[in-house]
Length: 188
Image (cartoon, rainbow, N blue to C red; front, top):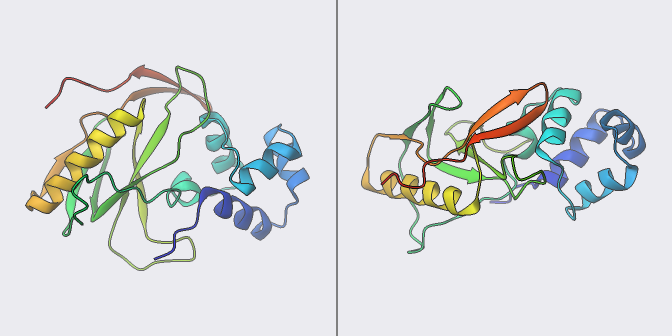
């Protein structure tokens, strides 16, 4: 199955809205070259810019970037099957998923989240891909990988529920996000 990247999603959404790169750049208060890099996949916007893109283009963050990377962190190369109900207390989300996906590393300062995790549910696919739901932010690739591994093991073992353990707590002020707690590295 082919997944559209953030770059392809952004380009398609911009064109669907009838906007040029220059117009989007003006709305986002960035250069046209920045938009071009985002659409070519050679650059990635800061977290704040992702939130602003979502708001300004009137599209969910899930639709904008959830298909970015269908990463498999299972070291045994086993495919997990079945579904699991994942709860994300930091984001107040509960979602039934059959797999999880992450964003690529996002630009931003040291106090910004670096990765996002999405749950992929069963349902009919649309132009934008499979139905997804945002689950949480992550401060590091290590914590994200740990979470994904545990979720895949739980799905493979037939465990019906899973609560996120390593996601970061963030504070939102307008379109800015700041890490409050990077995630619990000591949880089993």
